[in-house]
Structure formats: structure tokens, C-alpha cells
Length: 251
Image (cartoon, rainbow, N blue to C red; front, side, top):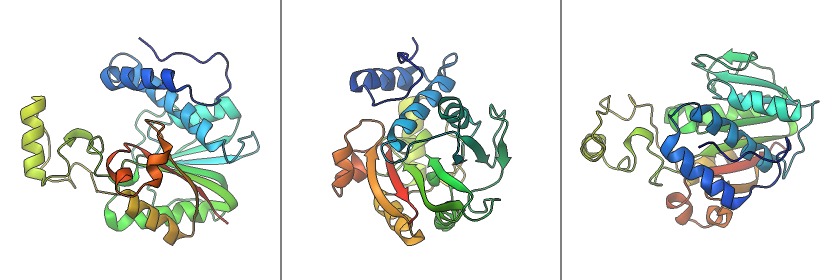
């Protein structure tokens, strides 16, 4: 099964029933056939719909995707809106987007104020804690004044935030590893969270770092379950929101 196609090439508001159908489909089939690519492209559409609640994307805009992996998001944004998009990743692999730069987020090789929009989805939790603020500061630096950023994190205390160690990732690493191997019957490589490139980031920590960098937080969204009100409730947003997106502006 494939995600239900939209009726036209335009990305509009998210149909909640279709969205939940796709979430379930990708949860159980993401590594079958071409589903991983389709999942990335589907969530690129979600990203466009969320950003355009604040900033209409046009072919005159420049966009930076920090940690964009192979570049599926970059390609989708270019195809749908005509933006000039740069994909930046330390290990892009077999990139599907020609304008891909190999670099790290805390040393972005672009000049101040170069981009209209910057994005980073599910990246900060893979960056060591002492470099997370530097990465956010760099994203802020390369945005023009009045530009927007979209940064998404999986709050650490949500059961889905631990990648290959979920839902045991909030426990000490040796315990989480053994429980994951026992219940999922699959060997977990590595001997520490650092070796797994997992560095806890909570909603509160992310919000504080974003404010420290100078960003104005325009809104927070629940990208997966679409229960946006939960992102406004302390404690609950740390536990019940699997993917919290921050819509940010550089004043």
C-alpha cells in the first residue's frame, strides 16, 4: 500500500483521517520497497503546509535544510514551490538533490543572512549537547532579518523519541539496550547513547535554546498526531507529543 495521493500538486491543509492512515502505514512498512522515500516526501508535504501558515513559499526564496540526509525534502520543496534549496548534511549518502553540501550544522559554510527559510527536522537529538546551541545559533545567523525557521524535535520523554532504543531510551543505556534486545529480538549495536548518536533534548531545553539564539517563537505544532494544543501544555508536551515543531522568526 502507498500513501493516498493528493488530488493535485498543491499542498493544502492536512486531511486528518488520511494522515492517520499514512502514519500507520509508514509505521509498519517504512523499510519495505520504496516506502522510506515516500514517507520522506509525504512529510515534506506536511512541512510545506505548516510553514505556509506563516510564510508563502515562492520561486524567489532560498531555503536551507540542515541535516537533510539524502535531500528528499529539498527536492520536494523545489518541485512544489520552485524555491532554491540547499541541502546540508555531514553524511548525505547517495543524495537525490544536486545542491547538497557536506558540512555540519554548527559550522554552516554560508554567509550571514543568506536564506529566507531554514529547517531542521529530527536532527538536534543526534548532535552532542555542547553543540546543540551552536547549531541553532548558526541557523539563526544564516537567516535574513524577517526570515523563518522550522525546527522539529522528538521530546526525549515521549515513547517514540529513542529511535533504536525506544521505548526504553529514558532508562540507563545498559538497561535500555537489554530490554530492547529482549522484547524486539534484535541486537543493539553500541555501548552508550553517544555511540548511538542519541543526545537527549526536551521541549523545554529546545525552547530555551531557541530563545537564547534570538528567535521569536511564532507557534508550536504536533507534526505527527496534529494535536497542536498539547504543545502548549507543560509536562504533557514532553510526554505525549512525538514530534514537536517550532515555527520561528528572526526579527
